[in-house]
Image 1 (tube, rainbow, N blue to C red):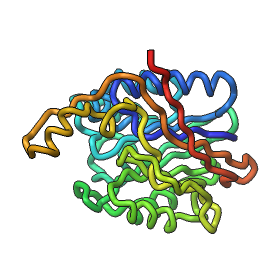
Image 2 (cartoon, helix red, strand yellow):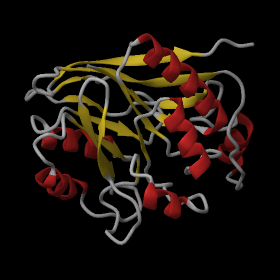
Image 3 (cartoon, rainbow, N blue to C red):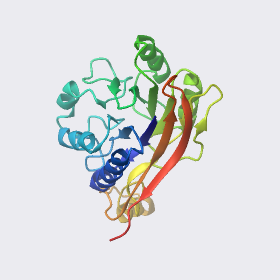
Image 4 (tube, rainbow, N blue to C red):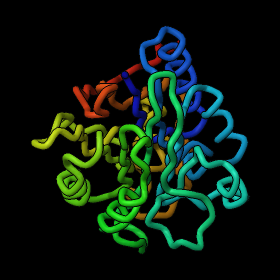
Length: 261
């Protein structure tokens, strides 16, 4: 089975290119399942019910979130009934929604877990111990497990990958919007990448308009960072998983660029 795992979708340009690629790959049989981070899909921060439904309809089997999970009004009600859109599992238990879900794909069931880091981030429960607790409760027929860690520090992501090596099919990092060059199989067989990258405007500073960001860096003055326009890129990885065992066979970077009109 082949699976596409997509980095942070940023605003309408990210949603546009995601829909194009997802429909093309699923329509051709290039992949059987898609995991997409929708953390920045609503105007660059958070998600709405309408946008969540849009991403699922476009081909995402599971949409993951992160530290901007509550940035949009009404997200708490949406996550209370849409289990395919995940908030981090290591948020307080009182938060609505779920942090792990098993979905059926044409090839096999897959399980996706969402976690948020703690280094240079807002307070959350320990992602390492949360992963242990969630894995301990999974049934034997849940299929391969894919763990996303939405975190700032590369060290925290790498450590979690090593901590879960051999226990899950893959671990992928998100949040920094810049893809890393370390996709590969860890010693015990888990596929890993420190950051999937970004799905959004190519001519930007991690998805935002150039001028306000440059003004902020050169003057220190507060600015509004709107989502940039123009052609978009989709960044992520394609994983191949063995159906019989659920073990990762390969992980390869994936990049798609829209052509300028």
